[in-house]
Length: 592
Image (cartoon, rainbow, N blue to C red; front, side, top):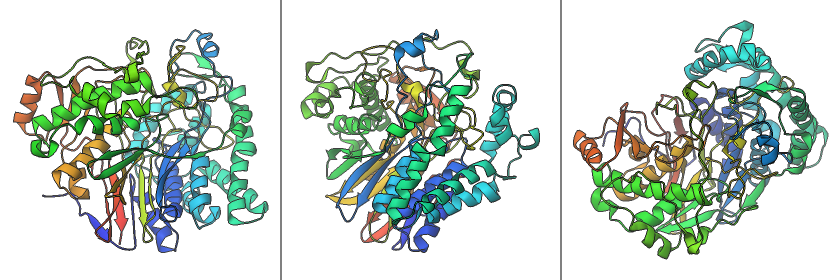
């Protein structure tokens, strides 16, 4: 099978990400003697600088880590929580029935810094200075500006100029949209990172003690103070069409810590797939596997109408359960054992017929009654609300960019999968003292009482961020993932199934024609849904597209290379392997 690039094979180390500079950075850390954790952290911080339209220091990141020492996978949760003042009454009292998608009101505690530094503390070998040096370099000395960043800044130019002056000062140097390929700098952010390094080193002590001191700088020091003051002192325009202050305070940051958790797992044939808990959408991947286990996908074959239809219908059922049952398990009882049980999935599987469903059909695990949110009507012209939505996919389904994902494996066998996002420059105004903006992930909460994902003080919003890890025959095999909002656990699932049932190698599985459903309600403002709609690349056979239409699917044919942003690394047959997505001409894998 022709592939756009080779599957990389070696025994020193592999890094795959959504930007070539970030991947090269990670590999440089491995070459200098760092391990996979060191490399992943350096890669993650560089992505914050070079893909600012898709993530930032004020964002979040969930991380899956295979440790050779512990012989297990663990989850590091870098999803920040809502402010203590974030009650439903506080928001609806402003005349709102849905949380805005931009501005300061939907800001949550920025969890990325905490998660990356905890990964470095627990599993790394290098100092904070060593892993931050590349990010500081690109912020201070500049990096070649991506076309997509230039286009995003141009889209935001009017809002920056008229409403978000601190963002104009950061992203419109000289009052102009920076050109594609120009050398773009963020000296304020560079100074922030330099100060954190200096203060943490001044604290003295061991490597680990200095990393903890750096987290104190962020969550209990000058960074937290600047965030709290900015949210309190500024009313800013958001997608509601009105100006609001933020609810986030320095005290909210001081109370928060990144956590280490056990992943949720599912045994699929001879594979064990690991995902985050239901504070993220990751378990829908496992639910889809539980449904698909009752079908002979190998006989159907990747790319056939039966293959696409069966996966789509399983997807609809799993995502309907996401809507009804998922939320922060610290605040709601999510019946995951029942949702993954053979009995429940045998019953749900009967709902899959030869005809495309147009309904949102959550189940009743253990006899519990599902309750769905009241989905707001999409406001007229919402497509033109600047900064709204997830930055990877437009409302028309057009793929806009690569967002962020990182996979690393080192010579000693440590493997990491991480999906950083949030805090992108379109989401909220830049904090002038820090050089970055805040995540608006609280837009995923519902302003309705009694739902698993209702807005609550100090709760995690049910995020879309969802790295993936799989063991084969009980041994670590594959770290993989993709950006893409609600499509993440569709594109990554399709990739996994291509490898397992299509006998493809890592790169073949990525290059195979892709698809995703927009049947489920969007996780991002304004929560639109398009029943039975599916986007497929034009490389699918016309007979397959026609058969899907005959079965009732609303088929939208996209560009030939428009679906998916998957990257992956693997341990396979004594070798380390890697592959990355060619779509968008940006993602890259490196290794030897």
